[in-house]
Image 1 (cartoon, rainbow, N blue to C red):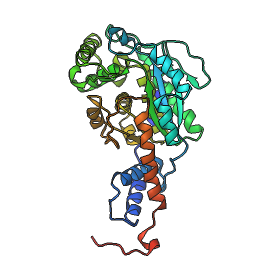
Image 2 (spheres, rainbow, N blue to C red; image 1 turned 90 degrees about the vertical axis):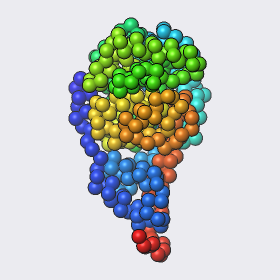
Image 3 (cartoon, one colour; image 1 turned 180 degrees about the vertical axis):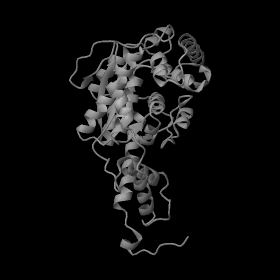
Amino acid sequence: MNGLQNTLKRIQGLDQQAIQAIRVYEDTLTKPPGSLGVLESIAAQLGGITGQAFPEVAAPKAVVVMAADHGVVAEGVSAFPQEVTVQMVANFCNGGAAINVLARHAGADVVVVDVGVAAPIDHPQVISKKVRLGSANMAQGPALTREEAVQALEVGIAVAGELIDRGYRLLATGEMGIGNTTASSAIVAAFTGQAAAAVTGRGTGLDAAAVGRKAAVIDRALAVNRPDPADPLDVLAKVGGLDIAGLAGLILGAAARRVPVVIDGFISSAAALVAARLAPLASGYMIASHCSAEAAHRRLLELLGLKPLLELEMRLGEGTGAVLAFGIIDAALKTLREMATFESAGVAKGEA
């Protein structure tokens, strides 16, 4: 566990002096104080993350898609069969998925990581970090061993480090894994004590009856495994998954290197909750891109203390909402860097 533990120790709070300096500078720009709203908050947060008065995170940027399978699909919790996971990985590599289209639009790279797909993958565009061939069926016992959960976390930490070493200064979370909304709902239920029915949504497009069966499977998994909400690793191992663990590790690895991470939808937010429970200061490095149509996503964001930038009724995953937020982040930094001050523009400043 040295990689994980060393990473947790390296995560520090945001640079409050940098935040304050940016807030003061924003009030010298040619606009009423605070009138750019969330854009000003983003710029200040990025200053706190990087320690820079003019943060440089706009390029290059990448969305990391962690791919893994979930044994719980054997319980009929998804409208799609398990083999769709490996098929979608091929689609990512061929550039045909929604995340590819939206990443191209945002000027971002798509990085695909096989952390636990239940089939062999040999493709030059896939980073092979397979921990095992999919998780076990959590309705019958732990999805992962504790050691496997740590290994998957450390995959994410390693990927974050590799990308940062290559010059990436803004990362986003994405995922692919049939069955992963079930694991995410189970994580939320385990941490909050809420009934599964309250935190279970349609996932890949289930009808009401199927959602009820999915919630019943989650209740059974919680009863069988009894995950300890005071022990994030226990929750992750017993009712999580390899893609979720990989994303949690990515967030922790980025936070340890003072690099911001844009959080995608429900599954990514479940991973973010695991990361925040392992290292509470890590939440300061997260930017919530959107609130998805999944039932419990807003509750998840509230637990993280995050406010979404967008509400587009999306529920695809893959990192699609996260890359849409890249443009807003770019805009926040451009206003900070490029707007004239009252003094430089010769504009009279209003009185409070």
